[in-house]
Length: 202
Image 1 (cartoon, one colour):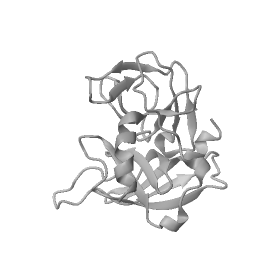
Image 2 (tube, helix red, strand yellow):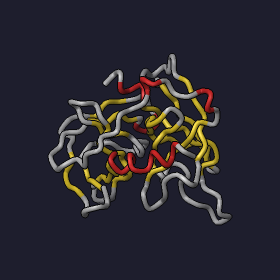
Image 3 (cartoon, rainbow, N blue to C red):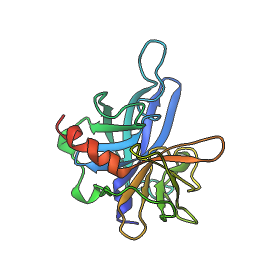
Image 4 (tube, rainbow, N blue to C red):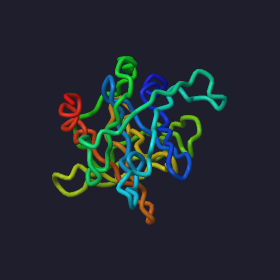
């Protein structure tokens, strides 16, 4: 998990109302995946999103933040969609491409109910934490929608976090939201894989 943590970061967002935080992870040399609700976020009355500037803070694994660094990102509206629930963010400076050992492997399998999970998250903007206790897929969505639900005990700041297979370390899904009833929704990594080739061509 320590090695996989190099590919997960805190998404720092400058919003019109102040700062915001989510989680995100590296899926290609210049691309980060996170929740659509984080970036671009809610659309304002003037048609602009609430997220103005975003970056990914990497290696924020200790409270003092020693060794952490930020790389700035931009939202490309051609990538992802509100209905899909996921945004792909690109590095503003492509010359600062992510190191190969930061890129997480996406599984092409839809996780089944009962599949154990672990989560790497920046809950409430804090340093990275590892969540594993009784964490598992609870249900699949309807055929073809690639949605899964899970019971990982993660809260504010964890939208966009990767949900991983504890044995292989592959990303199985990306956390999208937690409802008022406590049900947590995620989009399968297999669905991300289908979009990534198009994303990398842009």
